[in-house]
Image (cartoon, rainbow, N blue to C red):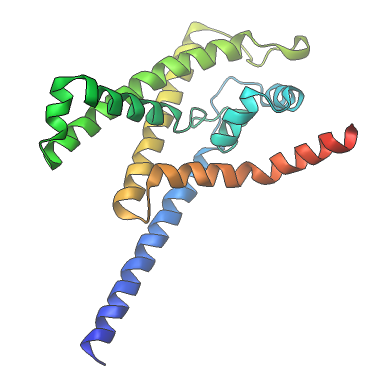
Length: 210
């Protein structure tokens, strides 16, 4: 066996390992989609999404891989991270301190990445509070989506959604570092692919009912 053959096999095994790690992280993400936040009436929530049709909630639900419809700990998805990344890039141009950090090489980029993580958590808290407020006030057909609206439930829900977003962000970074491709992009792709069959079925059903 030649040295080139050994090198080729080594590269192949390395690539297989990275692919398996990527699939493993994505599988963890998909399992988390089905971990619901306590205190939500799942049957009423499904009825709400079924009656809502193709609105803004449906679009957010698709990008979250169905996590919003389940109201799972991953309901916010990667939205806060994407928003924080965009804001970070804009501030890098507008704020001299961040602009100087971006020119310091790897150390500066790591610092900006850390700021982006902080921004992600902050935005997750804000969006989690807004989503919790909407959920607590929505009552399609006179039936509340929440079993019992209390301050402790709101606080627990916001913390759960924030922790879920932080974990999704961590998964994306792990895929980027140890797997294949950009982790956040792969998570978005996996979310859309997972909900695509149901979206097509619902669209076909609505078309036939017209």
